[in-house]
Amino acid sequence: MTQTQTDTRNITLTQALNEAMREEMRKDERVFIMGEDIQRGVYGASGGLFEEFGGERVRDCPLSENAFMGAAVGAAAVGMRPIVESAFCFMWVAMDSLVSQASKMRYMFGGQVDLPIVYRSSMYYDGSMAAHHSDRSYPLFMHIPGFKVVFPSNAYDAKGLMKASIREDDPIIFCEDRTILGARAHVPEEEYTIPLGVADIKREGTDVTIVAIGGMVPRALAAAEALAAEGISAEVLDPRTLVPLDKAAILKSVAKTGRLVVVDMAHKTCSAASEIAAIVSMEGFWDLQAPIQRLGTVNVHIPFSPALEPLCYPTHLTIAEAVRVTLA
Image (tube, rainbow, N blue to C red; front, side, top):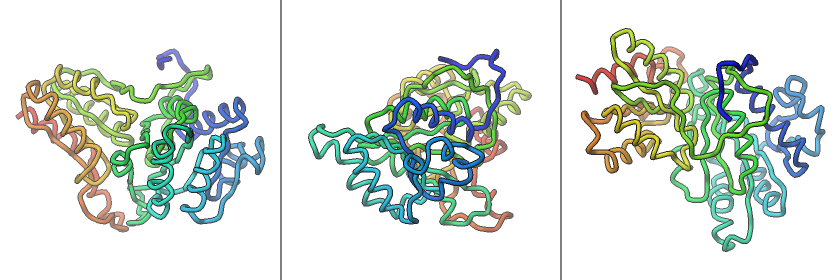
């Protein structure tokens, strides 16, 4: 099902995620939520999940990511379908459970076990959260076989991708950009899912392709709007999932426009943007009319200072300038 302009119900990305989880929990009693401080806040009175499903299926865990992310592996291995909430992107302290167990278990057991886990990775960058709370770890999980990596940029996609992720039998890293959680979009009440591995063109264009990830999509769209006033037609493509990655859609867009700008809020070195740029340089080289431009966060620890932190990230202004460079 695709989104249409006739939809009239606008909800936030947070509300869309809660709707997706509620609907899947009603359908399948094996689905439950576990993690940090989840019986209050968005899962409590304002979200209603704790009130509806109770403490057995909306389960608070101790402040030990390695413990509860590892417990999710055991729960999934015996038939449950956990959704794991870590509050922030605190994935590093759970890397043994994630990398040594979750990502490898199906392979190590010769395909005899399913591991249906959704690990929610919440990124609070660009809000004076300093270095620890501003991590954006998804490029690392792209590197690890066994994980699928999902990254919606709006409420409509978030609901469809979350429902599809919960139904997957592989572990999912479900990335949530906290800079856009309050952004509203048309989300129909009818049942729908969005298949993993299918990109979406958010704006058609002919002069340059902008591939933007997560919260960079609204910034890329703002840049495209500004560039249109200059007579530049920019196509904005949202991968929606990074593993599996819709290479065909990206290459098709670049073949049409001849130019590529990739925008990623992760650190520029070894980022998702780096992988996408490498793919296009190898498989779409003869379609390129100019060098690829790659934008990402500068390779520094994120400063606490609200004056300094915004200087680290791509903006609609730097995206527009990168497009101008490709057209020079």
